[in-house]
Image (cartoon, rainbow, N blue to C red; front, side):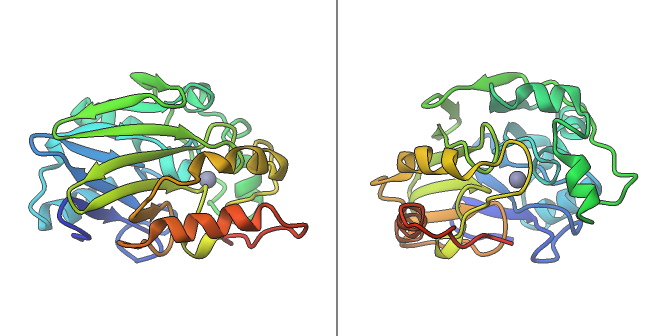
Length: 244
Ligand SMILES: [Zn+2]
């Protein structure tokens, strides 16, 4: 589904575009290359490829996969995409070991399965990333440069990706910040409110227009206002509004 001049939604469980566990799977058309931000759970890649084809996008042109973090609904399809098309696969250095190992405990799949978010027989397909990211790294992809902003809190190395598109300054936030300023605090290892508080300021004063979270609603203008709500809520005495 075409969202803006250069950004497409190729899959999403929430919008019924792909398998129910899938996060929002974004494609950025960078000219000769396509960048995918998050892959979904990897349970029905064919449907995602068909969505892309309907939008005139060739899945074979996926050159770079930017993973916001290692949770299965975001990174579970990376191994299959690597096998099919051989793209570069980027994830923070902090979470790289989790997708390499692929075990339920380090991916927090054990608690997610207990919570009914995945079927007990779901298996994460381990993936060897081609590149690991540190805060502030730049990924050059065709016409656009993506900057990694590592904001731990939802998970140990959750990463947002900022890119300056002709339609505006865009931020892909994974599960760090959602529309209306909700945050992605979980009751599992790696998710930590005090760590959120210490890191959320990295998203201050960016002047973001387009906000593309890993679930639910996106916005094509005024994105920074949604981020600022999250920053404000993390400065108050009460636990901020959560995404689920
Ligand atoms: Zn997550």
